Length: 112
Image (cartoon, rainbow, N blue to C red; front, side, top):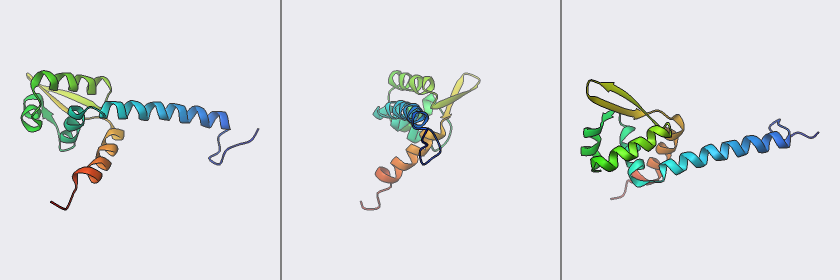
């Protein structure tokens, strides 16, 4: 049986690559909605409750709650309850890494 450069048998490598591509595809799908991307970009700055996010990103509460629900389901954000408030923060290191790259490429423009 031959081995690949990274030490896996070709079939094992193909299975690992398939699994990785599914995970990457799901992450990119979660990031593909503009409101979800905007929310995650804001959450890179820290933890926020829904009313703070609504004010900061300019997305109405019904849509905001729907998008936060999707991000929770996809395990990209985590929640913390404090009294009646629910606070959101980024829970995915993979999402954070992609957001940092997107920020560098699209948001960190030096020319005005």
